[in-house]
Image (cartoon, rainbow, N blue to C red):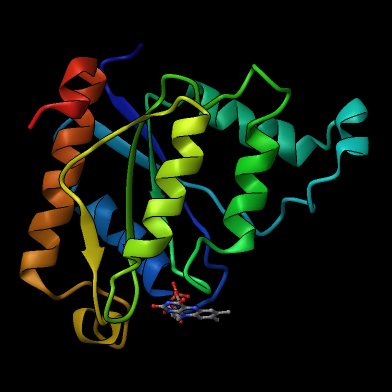
Length: 188
Ligand SMILES: Cc1cc2nc3c(=O)[nH]c(=O)nc-3n(C[C@H](O)[C@H](O)[C@H](O)COP(=O)(O)O)c2cc1C
């Protein structure tokens, strides 16, 4: 591992003015020292089809390789119909294959999301369930449920709410600690 901690981040929203994408950009401003965040788009991944696994599409291969090489992951999920968006599930399904060789195994992973009144709490529960199954090393805390996105970001997409900025900073600090000391991912 190089001395700079490399985090890979992605979101399930493809919307140009997405609050969740804006939260990812905010995270890039709030990183601890000696840490970088590479943001990936999920929009170019094809729909998962097991037939394609025989000759895996190059974009899928690249996506999996980025996750494999990452020291840690930051997944930012909107809530769609009480769950994660299909775009995000599609990406996770690709990266979970082949069975038993998921690139998520043991990967320090932080999750957060921007939504309405519930701040994506229901979607994050589903995301935890999926990532637990894939044996990712998911941070227990802090939980980052960003409510009422329209109140937290300005018209340029900048996160202006200071308590939320502090919460994301705390999440990133915990993620970096989990990379350095894996047992701390579940410390109280
Ligand atoms: C198909 C669809 C389903 C949605 N379902 C929920 C939901 O179950 N709970 C919720 O709080 N918001 C729901 N929303 C609202 C989104 O959370 C909201 O539009 C959010 O801003 C989307 O994230 P984005 O700004 O990053 O694109 C839904 C939106 C769409 C388009």
